[in-house]
Image 1 (cartoon, rainbow, N blue to C red):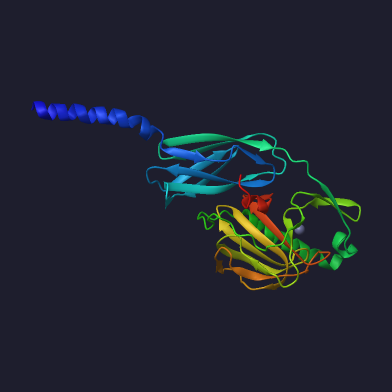
Image 2: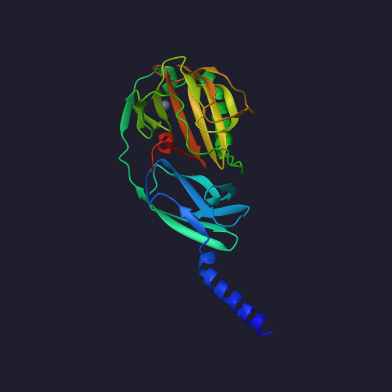
Length: 283
Ligand SMILES: [Zn+2]
């Protein structure tokens, strides 16, 4: 009887000792700061399995699936820092009864202006092409809006072509003297015929010719992340195809609105265009 009682006390003491550890079972891994217009990898590391982690920031939220990893169990997603983000981003993670939070300081960027001279048809498109342009926009918008609940991407991301940057992300575009938009992707040097590789695993959701983008491929990487590859001379994949990271999806070219062959690489996260190259630099 006395021994049982002692064992009970010991058990209670062990529970008390364990309690502080149990209360801190989400480790939220984020960079301390990030530039406007970048993608940030957010990871919650758990020491017990849960189905999903719910991430909440500003007025947005996302449920990310938990997978087993070297560190235990973890859930990751790509957080977009909008080009016009003004305030620091406070992010919270919740799994079961556990919670954690962190703040990412937003660093402002002085976006450059770029003057571009192209064929007049691409600045003021001929009437006959307006329907095609509208159809392209509608199709693209639908794809960028979807949030596939599974995550296909894994780090490290693969650079689609080896070439250097010829036009950076975010520059305000002045076409033949008119400010039209900002550059929602990055242009990489790629002579016609250069193999283009998927930056991460995913599912092809668009593979066709569009008026401005020329031959273009969009890949859905899950949890709201979609990459796009424009101006290709040849497309090697079809909608519905699953691709692996680094898989060839086509060849570079000069189709659509271009002044010469290159790869226009886009990355959209939860509806926000961000600099795809931010995935390749350490943050
Ligand atoms: Zn471009």
